[in-house]
Length: 32
Image (cartoon, rainbow, N blue to C red):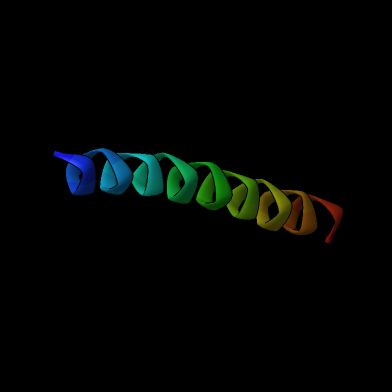
């Protein structure tokens, strides 16, 4: 149960960081 919870948290964090990365890449592309 605990492992499941932590994996869910990790997935949320990954999604957040991935979104941030995509955003920065998009801004870079727009600036170009």
